[in-house]
Image (tube, rainbow, N blue to C red):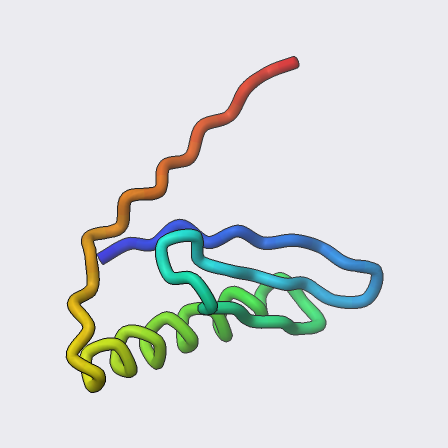
Length: 68
């Protein structure tokens, strides 16, 4: 499955979250590292849902860009 991740740059770090998986987040010093960590967080998050008998839904978030 593919999940959309949102990456936000802060003053000294990057944060990432997954709109389709509330609570699935990661923070790191670099963009590359935060992508690695959010990928790992998604796996852990999905495993936790499965262990707790919670059915995961197919990702439904979409991305679109608008020019202004």
